[in-house]
Image (tube, rainbow, N blue to C red; front, top):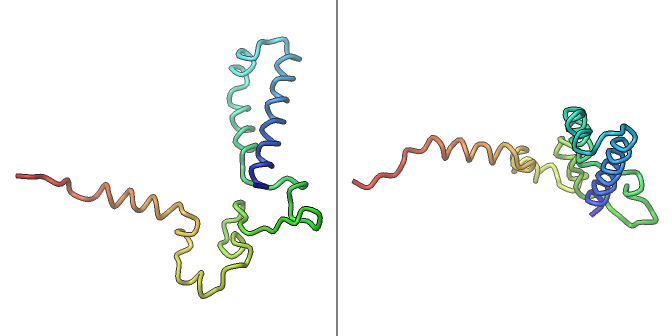
Length: 118
């Protein structure tokens, strides 16, 4: 929930900023977006990254405990040290991250010969 709140906060801020800049430029929103397309795309990609804003970090007052840090690629850090080394050794790091396993399944599916009924 903290990641969602952080992301929504950044998206609202981004939209408000773009709106204010378009008004200040004297251009309509559409024209402003067209002229600044690449810059805004990069800025928006940064805006929607999984990271926690300072007010959503774990603290004494919010009782939030970090279980999964989606900003980490190191598996031990990603799961906040809650998984034992034995458990991590049994599961491939890529499958915990969920990316390479899916890509490999797609590649394997593509290599299978088509079923034919003759």
